[in-house]
Length: 267
Image (cartoon, rainbow, N blue to C red):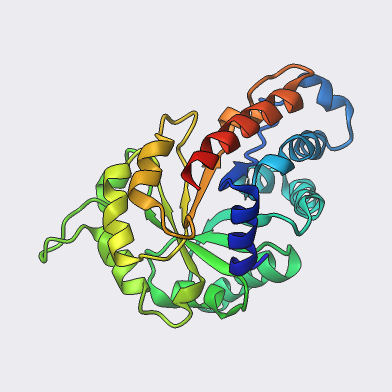
């Protein structure tokens, strides 16, 4: 799915919900352990229950990579099962230089078929540029995250008065291929969203933190919405772990529907 298709899907469905598949084998219902691939069976049922109420899925690769080759196979099966009607994000937070970054881009865009991958900007332009060479593929760069450690670097002020996260956004907006950039911006810091919007007025923002982390949808929309919405609100735990019983998929669908219906107010 490319950006134009994502915008069309958002306008058609009247929601901008991204469901995070942070599938932890220690948290899924125990009866799923009877299956050969419990994580995939969990994901399959969650996807079936939520696909009508979201426009995107985000797979946190750490929950698959720690299982070795079996986990990678589950990740690939999950990506394929989602299909092409949703914007598919590999939440991998890669960021390196040269051939290493080339290989990361190839792995997620060519071999796995994701539409976007999250990347860390600390090593600068040459660590991100390999991801920006792919037509109709997107790099979602960490800008301002919702964790307490964001204060260590992202919210440090430079001599010109800018926060470091502002410098990251402002600089990257001038890179070749910047039209294929998006940014991660945590919902628990909505007061800074307007600063990012001033620097990147039309760029899509992936916003985690609404739901289990306590972020406010209304505040995010107030500071971050564009004419084309320009937001993907990610909810993971509040949806996929809405229940740990046999009704887990049903409850996940209900929570996704609730969030999606709340989003219709902003169209």
